[in-house]
Length: 525
Image (cartoon, helix red, strand yellow):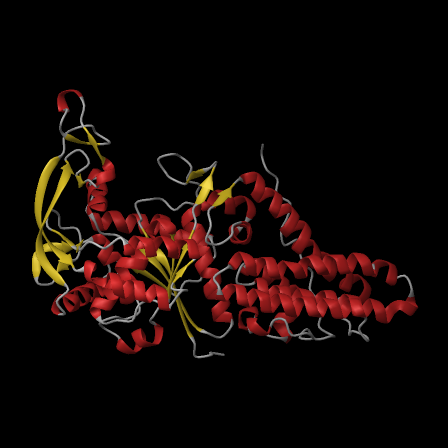
């Protein structure tokens, strides 16, 4: 079923010392839904996620817990990050860890390549350092001292004087790539989406770029610089390279050619790394830049960006244990305009679950299958000549399928779901207006009853296909209940771009009993 078109998409690689919260889950299910859609459209699809495991912060956390860094990251990944994928029903093709040998060897090859091409030089790095924080401070983290420290620069956190430290580092000539980056943004307006993110990056690059320190020599938890083992590669350079190393850069040229370039979906706080530093590094190495970078907004809880320190971080299982993974996926992908900030509240989740999933989609599925069982002994009837109302449903299904696919091309999963939901609303109204329960009382209206219930069932068939990338669990149950698995084939094999074609469900197919797809949730006050 392959179209031959490559669709390689990545989540950011997550920092495993933070326990996964719903923000990490949001990015991951968005990317998974996009990947599932393209996979079901027959595109040559590959979804990558993973963890970023090097750096000074990780080394300190391990040391504070009395273990070696590798032991520490192994524990975090196995206990928190692999289970997240299972909790949210994510069908990723690969999971990269930056401590894997495949990654480390290929990173060295890439850094050596840009060194050999003249884009790396040795230089002195001078910056103010806080011993309490054990890190170099940027201007925004430095304040003027008061009292005994008047006239000195102090750490904004510790209010203690900063030391001027010098470190010999290797630098990447990022400053040479400003014009080439601006040309990239101008010639490929979709390279950075949404537009607000693009504008921000363009003005940042227009202000001029500074060369980037790409190595550290004061600690050793990282990948060594190939030509100088006293240095390790700066953790951001190591992390960005995962997108290329995971698909064979420097080791499997055929695989790399097949997959690369990628689409990257990231939170807006790490946009500059992905839209400025990363394409510049690729240009320096003579490798094609990514297909595009999509920056989504923040998830706000009580008006604040989620963070562990402020206790606004909510574990995904707190939601899935109550509402299930499909409801989690549906809620975050439909309630927030993808690319903008969105607010999470339990009240909103609960209301949408009840209105849209239980009463809307779930009830439509239950009552349609129940009426086919009641009036036609569980066998899908053939449709008689259609009336205008029936043809209208066919048009709505075709238009919704086309609109959803176009929205997915724009990375707007929220708009795709809104388009598909027009089918749910239209079918519920159609059943109310046609009153199959009244038609069933009149033997002469039997052909009309057949048409109405075939139309409802065929509409559900299209919904199952179109919603399967968003809600894989409930759509699979519906698919089996419609008898489609035995007569048409597996749900994940249905060509999603043809989901709007009418008449796929075969009359004579036996439907099976369907338990409520979205059972009533008992919530404790």
